Length: 140
Image (cartoon, rainbow, N blue to C red):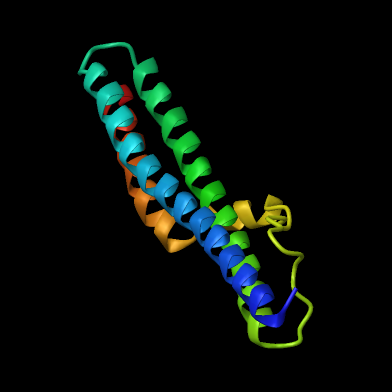
């Protein structure tokens, strides 16, 4: 394999990783929309005097969407790390991942930290605060 062919394959690999990054970002966007739609639907069922369990369901859904959003952000960040490693290796002599490898480090603690990243916190936090306020008004 010539050097040009190798660089061409690395560029294709970069495009593949970029596609994964794009999918993670798209998933985050869709989750934010679904979060608002589902929670608004459940809250609309929780009219004054109705069963307060609807608000609990909305809170559980809110936390679930918040966690999924944080998970996808953590995955996106890991794929960005892979992309950076590949991009540095195309023109240099650094050790780069094998061709077409999509292996990333586990996201365990990173996902937990992503709960409080601004793009996640400011999307889901206010919604959860509103749900808590509605529960206080409903129960108090």
